[in-house]
Image (cartoon, rainbow, N blue to C red; front, side, top):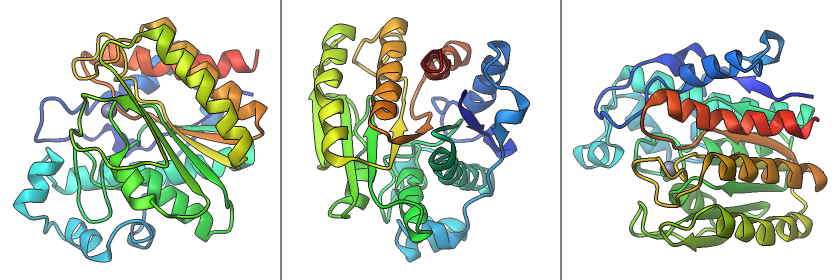
Length: 300
Ligand SMILES: [Zn+2]
């Protein structure tokens, strides 16, 4: 069984305001997956953009209204690092809808992958670091409100801490947030996840994988989540211009394979989001594609 892929045409929209934001990432990833025979048309699903009522399950209603009405203040726009125009909004709403759909499909099918998402810096009332809405937190709340899930684990392996996710979901029973990130990467002031593991710059494959292997299986056994949201950011890669953890292609593939296999062994469905990844878009798409290679290997 290969992964179900979630993709919306609005993922292709070009975003203004920062030369670092990888606008074409989802489109490049989809092309890369097609080239590798990993994106059969019958496995593709298109999400509905998130309605305001979904956003308000994880964000302050006043913040949702400000974003939808184009009324973000200057401080928020600086924190976001992108121009909050209609194009960015359409793209963000599609991405949130995509993560909700990936969660639903994962619960039905075992594994589903959103080709966007991972807005883990957005908090309840503020954007940050290219993230307008926190699709992970919204998806948890929507699926639970729909009665589809009660125990959720968020495994955030993006090189940056999932600070917004942690802040929104802090104290939320039934949701556990794990963030494995580089200590010296953004955000400099970290929040507290259910469990944070801070790694030093230059960590590399061996130590990184050893930490993950020691950490994840016992956590899955203890929490018994029905659903895992996996932020599979590839900015942990050694060639990423921002991330500092120095993983190789082989390390990334091993990481993704281990997460998927561990969740399957524990009986948890997995919904993935792309998370961060920077640099030349072809190389970044190839790094994101490793997750889908890992999914294919899992099915033998
Ligand atoms: Zn990141």
